[in-house]
Image 1 (spheres, rainbow, N blue to C red):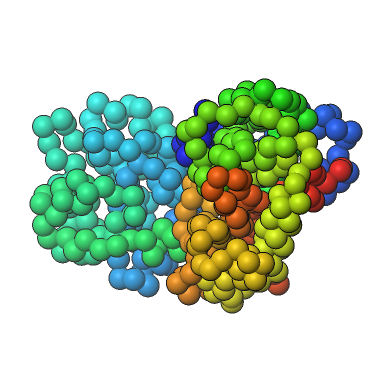
Image 2 (cartoon, rainbow, N blue to C red):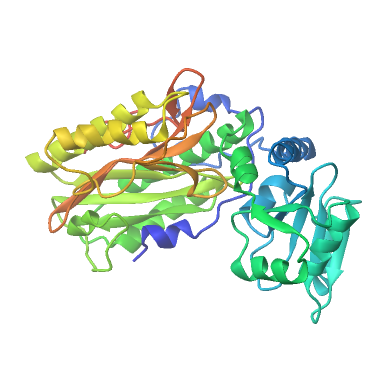
Amino acid sequence: MVSRRDFLKAGGASVALSGFVREALGQTTPPPGAEIENMLAGVEPLKPEDYEARQEKARRLMARRGLDGLFLPGGANLVYFTSVSWGASERTFGAVLNAKGAPVWVCPAFERERALESVPAGQDVRIWEEHESPYGLVGGIMKDWGAAGGRLGLAPNVSAFQFYGLRTDAPGLELVDGAGVTEGCRGTKTAKEIAFMDLANRITKLAYREAFRGLRAGMTPRELASSIASAHGRMGVSGGGGPQFGPNTAFPHGSRTPRTLEEGMIVMVDGGCGVEGYRSDVTRTVVFGRPTDKMARVWDIVRKSQEAALKAARPGVACQAVDAAARKVIEDAGFGPGYKYFAHRLGHGIGLEGHEYPYLVKGNALNLEPGMTFSNEPGIYIYGEFGCRTEDCLVVTEDGARHLGGLEAVSITQPFPEI
């Protein structure tokens, strides 16, 4: 059985959309089924100037916070600022962003040639042998910048062993939280990034729509997941979804209890894909056959909750106020209080990672800004019966917000509009 958490571990295709948003996103699409074709024609990757603009913004934020450097180990933050994709490892690899110039790299000696395939030409790559410490190299980099006793920001994905290594082998440095820089850059998206996510979300919705046409009695979640993955693949990306059937849909992240599809069962699918590494995240809840009155009522409440959240989201509004707007609809309909039935926050930030800063949740007073992107995913979960969640990703605009990829849900029997 494919669970939502299993799916979220999967990566997406690394492609980009030229011209920011394909004209097809605003046009009438071909007849049903005809759009299930490669949708990446004319795409292009981000350019060096895009990464330089990100580094320049990071430098401004570093100066504002009094940081002399920012350490980025392998992971999404490194990709974001440098384009270099490198997995997390016990052998420390990464870059130290310079408050004034190009980053300097720390690399295991035996990985140097592989690193040079990705690191921009001309940048300083410093190596450490297996018996040596990489953290002394970081201290040396800071010393060369005239900041031997300076403030080194640490990206949020720095591991505990790296923190303690730096504290031991670069004792002159003041180690501080660098999240204000990484999140300050990644929290708002450019037009290019939003275009990647628009396309990714549309692809996932089209893949679901295609797969839902094949629902049949006796189908397993794995069979439906295979159909969803296949449809993603035909559109040129690696993606999929984690289906749940019947009472299993009351588990927000899925149940391990095996079930096959029967007449009258709720079907919930949550998943997505990636375009240029930027993620989609879409959930649809439908019924196989005829819904009960309770199923239809719950679905309508959840959809109204999602609409209330979208209406509430606009620049200057606190993240927690958007969560509260969605939650009020559900509580006023009798499915409360608090997290009793709507068991989780309204949404998470999304971009290079499926879940990232910031979050739409009670207690988060951060104000929304244009370019912020979130999942908008209210739900009602009734254990022993069924659950219902409708999820689209939203982007905050200059005067409100909109859902990415279009194709918003219509009803419990019509998860997408006719196009």
